[in-house]
Length: 123
Image 1 (cartoon, helix red, strand yellow):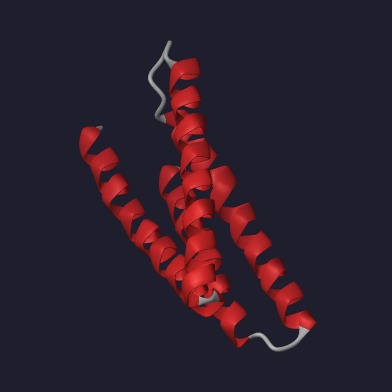
Image 2 (image 1 turned 135 degrees about the vertical axis):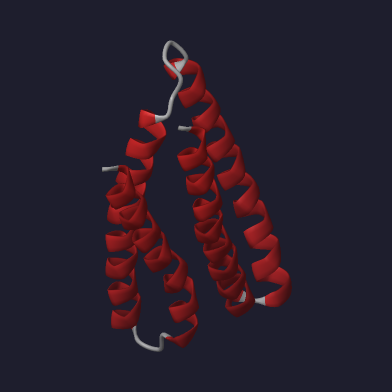
């Protein structure tokens, strides 16, 4: 159900948010491999459930438009994030970039709760 999907998505997103923080602590190659496994698990939990929730809340007869808006804004956000990430890494280093990435991802996780409350009220 919706509630199970939401909590699965939140848990996966938390896994994703924690990985960049642990990059800072990694000193061996196998640490990175282990973190990538953890990241993959988080992605496998977060993305399919997000897509399921998004799809269930698309307005009927506007599916194509809403998916196109979703994909366009997501692509633009990823491109913008890549530009700013490069600037941050160059000016302040990867440690600060990883901390910033974790912080912003955690902020996004907490934003999910706001969206979820809005969805519950709109029913």
